[in-house]
Length: 108
Picture: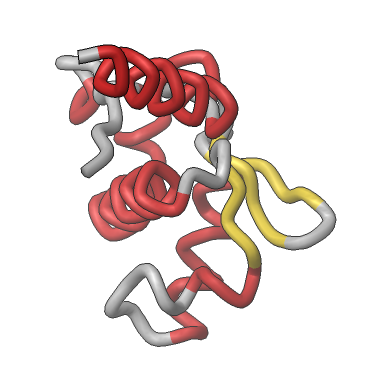
């Protein structure tokens, strides 16, 4: 199981307030998806509708809103959550921790 970090002022952050409730929820769904799938903050266009219960047109509109307010960015294949790796571990660091844990357990 993975975890994502949310600032305790998340709900009051100016970008979240500007995005609106539904877009903020899509952002949280995106954070959870990225942590679970270990994508380093990337969300492919094809994955957007799979990570939410919003319809495809609505999810796409909300994603555009997240880009407009600066929570997400467009990348060539979809979206990237702004500053994801600043606050959440990368896939590489998670793999290294798992490897180190396996080595510790093997020594016992």
